[in-house]
Image (tube, rainbow, N blue to C red; front, side):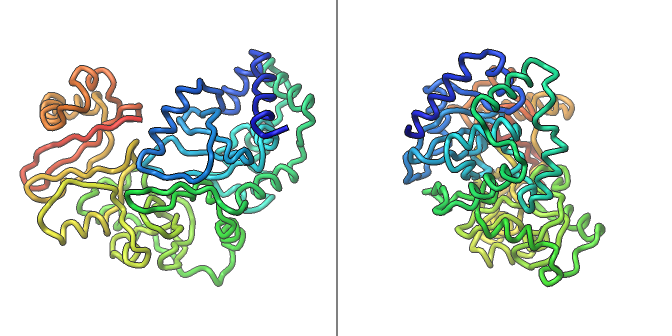
Length: 389
């Protein structure tokens, strides 16, 4: 049986049981989607990108990430947020994918955390998420019956081995950004070096004295064009090892445009330009033009970006870059009393993007249409950028 045939086999089984179908959607965050919808999403995610593999999309999650069968062999995932620039391998084959999906349920969680650093980490997280529930509801019972009917593996140790085998597969699943010539393959840290780094992260030889909390607070407020960095999702507040300076840090960013495999840069190495220099990298995807090359250098090489649907686009005013204030919707603009001002300017400057009516109806801070608010540090003018999923 080919992997495509195996996929259809499981799909038919699931579609025969409405309770099971709802359970997988609600408890496992997976949904079979119509082919045309999936293809539209894939076309959006792969715009200006190249993938040499044969891919077949077959499902999505609540974050609009797409599950795909690659080369009729293994299952991979492409994150629904283009700005995140993430993709990676989930399982070695279709059977293992559904095995892991139904036993681990929140499958993506394991790859976006440090749960794969050791079997102990994985087992503790597995227990905390209360997987393989006791069957007190019809949905839990449907999942358990499906697992038993297909003789899926339920031993926690063997599930861990399946996951690690997937993320360390070679060759890796890679998508290439043809504009920035960036290889996108770092979802779930799908590289055995990352797993090794986590496993060895307690080694004293890897650690240099870390920054104090006061140092972190100072750094968070030190970026000229990003003054509200502490309120932005771009900063990850976890202990890690900066790949630029080698220090153990408690705050870092992983959004960086580079050909190198980089996923942890401390704020100091962003601020002083060392990370951009070492990895030939930029932190901003695109911006309006200003004439001063020093200002362009400070924005692209020494300023963290921001989380968005389609990638950062930094606005300018008075021949200088504006300060980024954060994500906004109509509610936040109303609170500031600037709704009419910024929407009028936005529609005037972007005639072919979104209508005023659509913006007023759909713009939400954490919605599928999101606003990004900037303010000129010279004249005080507010400017708005909008994108959508």
